[in-house]
Length: 108
Image (cartoon, rainbow, N blue to C red; front, side, top):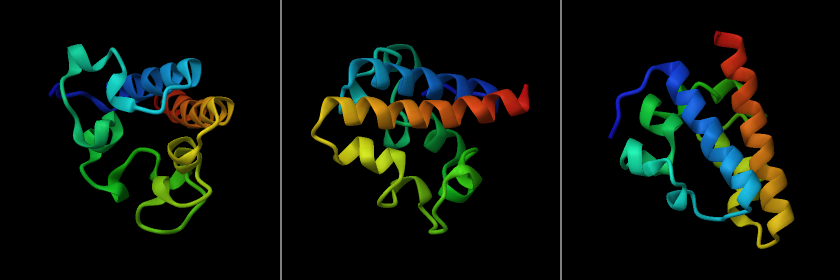
């Protein structure tokens, strides 16, 4: 497991979700980036960095108000995770990547 800064975490998370958006893949663990980063909590740089939903850099960006906001029904993450249709997964993954990008730009 690599120790990443907040900026590096967001960059890696965006790369993961851009890859998912492009590939339409339904498995985060297949992302080629893991070969250099190593395993991470929930196959997610953001989860690994924050170690808690409340400390996730995107916590305030999700529209839900529950403790585990990204996994709530209706969230782009949950849509990506549950969808059987490749185009729906691509669209949801792009929404997650775009959300990460906004946060990344805000800290630069």
